[in-house]
Image 1 (cartoon, helix red, strand yellow):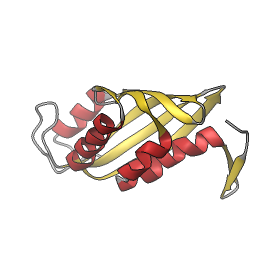
Image 2 (cartoon, helix red, strand yellow; image 1 turned 180 degrees about the vertical axis):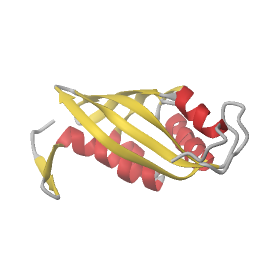
Image 3 (tube, rainbow, N blue to C red; image 1 turned 60 degrees about the vertical axis):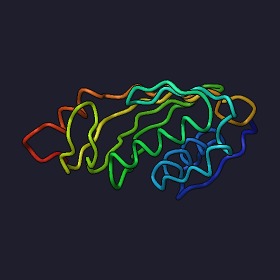
Image 4 (tube, helix red, strand yellow; image 1 turned 90 degrees about the horizontal axis):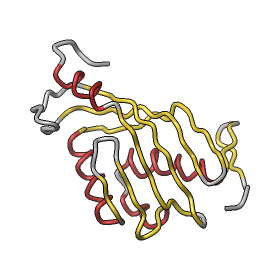
Length: 150
């Protein structure tokens, strides 16, 4: 991957970090699954913060549908990104309005959030593997809490 950088409001991102930004802010926040083949190898592997292990574009597209229909107005806040060679990791806050059952918890309508820590592995300019460790316990607590989640 070349070392070209983009200027985003004064913040410079490497090409790999820019792909991560596109992944979250354009693919996830807009549920734009047309970006999947541009970002990922056809046989990429994925383990999402909500648990499933998937291979390939179709399985991942189904996961996008699951998450974005379970959480209305689904959004990702990129809190930090760290790059080392062919890896980009970071800290993300995922949030939305709980509209469908998840982990046996019926829809609460609450605005809920959880933290996720992704590790992207790049190979020849595309993502080969993505592993996301997520705070599922915190999410379940927020979905079931009697207090309003922020």
